[in-house]
Length: 518
Image 1 (tube, helix red, strand yellow):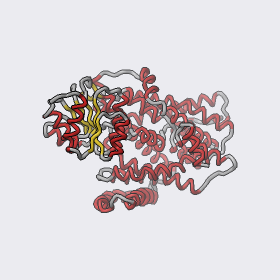
Image 2: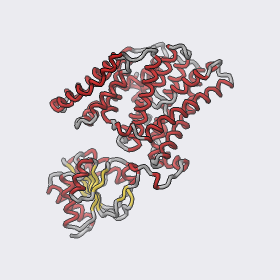
Image 3: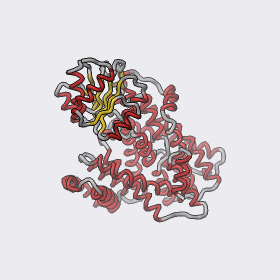
Image 4: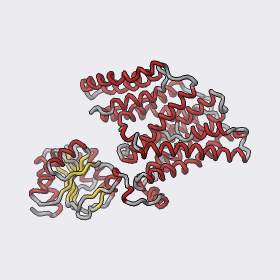
C-alpha cells in the first residue's frame, strides 16, 4: 500500500511524501490504529534525521541575531495569532472550543507555532539548498524551535532531568576519542554503522536515560562530530537510509488519528494560518537584510506545522489540558500543511517573483553581508573550481591570452591560500542558484570553465549557466568518455579529459572556441 501510494504520487508529479501520508489515512480507514514496525521506523528516521542535521550544523549560525530574533518573534506572534483565531472560532459556536480558556488556546497556539524539521530538511535537500544562506538560517530556526519544544516537553513531565544529566559534559572527551578513531573506519559499511551507533547510543539512549528527549541528544552528538573532516561524507552516506526510514514517519501520521467530520474541517481550517506564518518569516528575515528572494524562499519552506505539535498536544492530552479530539485536529492540520507546503514550494521562481512585489525593499546598507551582490569586476573569464586543473587553466588564460580571470572556489582554506598568492578568487558554490543570482558586472564574461573535480557538480553548474542564457563559451573537464558526451549533449562547447595537459589543453580549447588569440 505504501509503495503503491508513493508510486501514484510520483506518476501525478507530486512529491512521494504526499503518497505516504495518504497511505497512512487509507490504512487507518478499516480500523488499523497502529503498526509497531512503522512506528519504530518513524522514531528511528527522526532520530537519524536530527543526527544528520547536527553533522551539518554551524553553531555560529544558530546564535546569530537574525536566527535568534526571528525564531523568538515568530513564535510569540504565532502563539498570539493562533490563539486569537481559535478564540474567534469559539465565538461562532465551534463545539470543540466551547468553554476553552486562554491557557488551552495558548497551548494550541504553541503547538502550531513550530515548523516541521523533517519536512523543511526534505525541501532543502530536494533543492540542494541546505548550504545556502537561507537554508542555513532555516535550519538554525528549526534547531532553536526544537530546543524550545524539548524544554517545554521536559517541563510538562512534571519532573526535572535526572541529576546524572550533569554528567553529560563528559561526552566532550569521549567524542574527542571517537573523532581520533574515526579515520580508521574506512569509507564502507563500517562508517555507516558508526553513524547509526553514535546517533542511537550516546545520542538517543544516553539522553533518554537522564530524562532529556533522545532525538535532541542525537542532534547534540551530531553537532559534536560536525567539525570532523568526514562529517559531510557520513551525512551523505546516511542520506538514503534516512529517507527510507522517514517513510515510516509520514505513514504514522495518518495511522494515529480517528477523524470525524468536525475535527477534519477544523484541522483544514487551521491551514489558513500558514500564509501568516510564511509572511512573518519572510518579513522578519528581510528586516535583517536578506534579499527578497532569500527571505521568500525561507518563508515558504518554513510555512508548515510540525510533528512536534503532535507531541506537544499529546502531552497536553496526558495532562488533561485538552481533549483527545484535539490530537486529531492537529494531526489533520499537520498533514494538510505538508500537502499545501509541498505544492507551494514546487512552484519555484515564478511564485517567488510574484511574491517579491509584496516584500519591502531595503537600502544597500541594510543588506546582509552574506547575501550581498558578488562583483565579478568585468572579468572576461570565470574558472569554477580552482584546484590543480582549474589553477592551470587560470594561469594559461592569464599568461598566454592576457585575459582578466576570476576564480570561484567553495573551499574557504583553499580560497585563503590562493588569495595569499595574489590570485583573484571568490568563495562561492557554483552549483548554487543563489550564487549566480548575486553575480553583478558579468557583462564581459565570454568564457566559463567548469573545472570542479566531481562530475555531478559540473553537471549542476552547467545547468545553472544554461538557465541564465549565457552566450559565451563553456568549457568543462570530464574524467570519462561518457561524462564528456553527456556534458556536450547538455550544451558545453568544449569538454576535455581531466588529465589531458593538466588544464593547459582545456584553456587553449576554450580560448580557441571563444575566438580569443594569444
